[in-house]
Image (cartoon, rainbow, N blue to C red):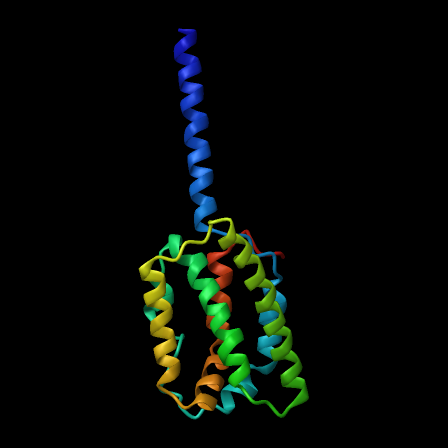
Length: 177
């Protein structure tokens, strides 16, 4: 009888450890104040979107790409999209307004911080990039490249709320409040 109790206890501990490991594979910690980034974006959203001349085209917004990401691919897609915004969108955008430029710089710096966190996660092999994640990122890149560089950067900046909401939703409990 005592042996059965020990066996059940060991089985329970193993199941708990396996489920904790699976959650760790799915999510990497992002300790970032998402509300601050969302507030920064809200402060420039109207000005950015007013410059968007392609109202019927989207890069992220109606894309089912983000909504169809499986939990196992969230880390990789997040890492790839942060790199995309840092390496392409923020660099391609040319802003004359110092107020808007400050807010964009603040968001870009936050993205760099999140990138660093996810890079550490990848180094610990907790952030896997499967083919599905690569395909999802490629679709967004292709959408971007269909527009002229300046228009694509404006469009992508105007859709930042979509990306921020997706990151917040998929990294719930891991972002700082």
